[in-house]
Each structure stands twice: as structure tokens, then as C-alpha cells.
Length: 318
Image (cartoon, rainbow, N blue to C red):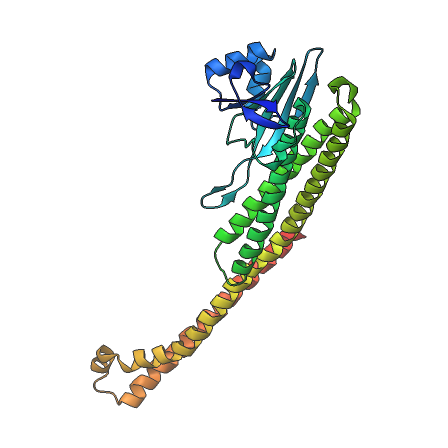
């Protein structure tokens, strides 16, 4: 789908595609891709790179066109774990026209930010700034979700919260890498403003975009470091919770084991029939002594097995 705009009265106004200076290709079809290749002098390799989520951000400058690949955050997908992912955005400038290629999601071209547009580069820089603000909003959401998961992990014995934490840590790594790669694109544009015919106001605005990107990148780095540093501690919390549960179950076992033993001995009707001619104190006393003797022999046998295994493992370590 193609949405076309023109710059009128310092804002973007929808217009006919033939007179448009700003074109947004949202999930373009094959016919629209062919139009892109022809109108903006793109190679098929360049266009395919836009649809590759793993493509590295870059900017290519030729005599009659500029082509950029920019990383932008996708809308959040909520399933078993909250996933924050990135995708590519293609930007092609040629003959005072710009094409914004959006393989996934949407690209809003409305709002207060797009009501102070004088030139094509003003629109491009606003789009770049909006994606950085999108990153910052997602980073705030990641921090909030991390705090919620941390509160749940304190009383949890399940791995699902820990797995969600791992997913957040992975998302932060992708965000940090995308922001650092985008900074390379911004730095290259800033180093050659004459090639892009940037005005002084646009250069100042570009400097603001670079600062915003650096702040978002530093924020992503800090969140990633904190999250990965506390991951082991949160895993230990789950282990401690499990150990506490096993301890409580062991205490219950110890309390009821003698009671079960007494009840079992007292309920042996078959044994009473077998020792019918013997006084019951003697018969049950002999049975109790036999159990004690069997338990003592079992204890000695298990102790020898443990000592033998320990001596073998110590010999291998030596």
C-alpha cells in the first residue's frame, strides 16, 4: 500500500501519488517494489536488504540519490513471553522526493512533529527522531516489566518468570545493537552535510537526533547490564524457594514417619496369627529388635558405598 504526501503550509498533506514528494510504501506488493526500483534508482539487492530484519543499518550516497537502512522497534508482541523486536526501515531520496519503505508494522506520519516541515530532510529527520522516541518508550516498558517479574520471582518456584527475564535481556541486546548501528548512520550523515544539502537548522536538528540516540543507547546498555547481572541472583531465589519447600516436606516426613511405623506394627494381624502361641510382648519385641538390626546393617552398608564412591572421585581428581 502506498500513502502519498506533499508539503503544504509546513505540514504533510495527502495528495495524488504523481505530485507527492513523500511516499510511504507499507508492506509493498511486487508491483510497488518494481515502481520503487525504477523511480528511486534502487538495486534489487538494496530492496531485499530492507526486508531482512538482520540487515545492518547503513547509508549509501551516490550522485543522484541517497539510500538508508534504519533500524526501528516493532510493536510489542505478547505471548508466553513479551517480545521486543526490531525491523528495518528503508529510506530513499532522489530528485527532491523521499520513499519510506516499511516491511512490517506501520509508520505514523501525523502529529505535532510533522506540522513543522519545510523540506524533505525535515520529514526524514522527524521520522528518525520518532523511531528513537519509540525505542525510549519500549525501554521504559521493559524496566517496568522487569520490576514486576522481579516481584513475582521472590515468591515463585517456577521457571516461566525467569524465562521471561531472559527474553527481556535478549530484547535489550537487540535494541542496544540497533541503536549503536543507527548512530553510525547518523554520524556519517553528520560528517558530510554538504552532500545532503542540509541547512544550518537541519544540522542542529540532526545533532539533537544524535544526542537522543546516544541517550537511548546508553539507557539500553545500562538496563541490559543490570538485568544480566541480577539474573543469577534471581535464579538463586528460585532455588532457595525450592529448598525451603523441600525442608518443610522433610520436617513433615520426620514427624509422621514414627507414627506410621507404630501404626504399621500395631496393625499386623497376620503376624499376630503367626505368633499365636507366643506371648505378644515377646513376639513384638523380637520383631522390633529385628527391624532395628536390619536398619543398622542397612546404615553400615550405605555408609561403605558412600565412602567408596568418595574415595574413587578423590582419586580421579588427583
